[in-house]
Image 1 (cartoon, helix red, strand yellow):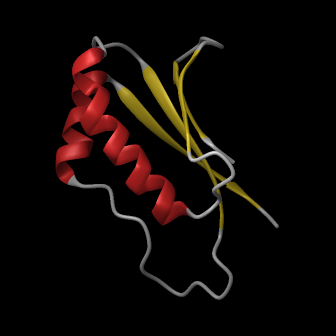
Image 2: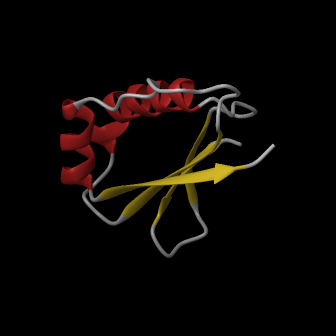
Length: 88
């Protein structure tokens, strides 16, 4: 499941990341890289980043980390993070 970045309430997709990737740590890393590379091109608004992921088999802790710098940029942009969990 890819990550979809959209304006909230709109069907227009701003970006699609991690096509075919269901691993949350990899997706969060790609999302963070995208935020750092593209935030200066986006005006503040109401955005969503919808991350669809599957739980890792035998997971027992650890995982994805979103840095304070990325979270700060997300706050300034008005970018909400949706975590959409899918089964097998």
